[in-house]
Image (tube, rainbow, N blue to C red; front, side, top):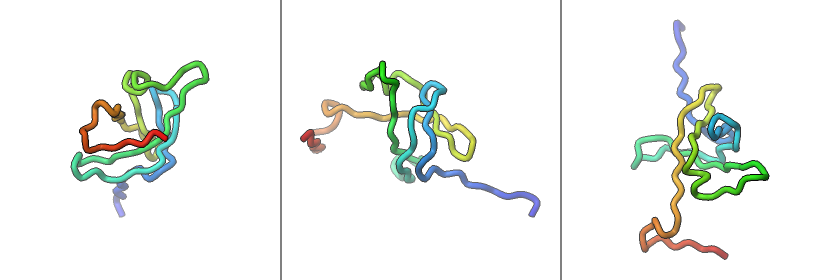
Length: 92
């Protein structure tokens, strides 16, 4: 073959970078048909001196490393006040 085409899609375990520094891993991923893009879920960790808040998440740039290439990622986090009345969240 003259060339090989690789389709790089996240599965799980890919590193997440916050402002260029490692901060966590992707735990699962799927294609979001409504968005027309890959959707990844993951955990983001902070240093012991920082507290993770909504502003901490929203006030940074993120990248996901897939097959040694970093792709820009946009975090989405919704507070209960931003969700519609049909969404029920359990806190206990």
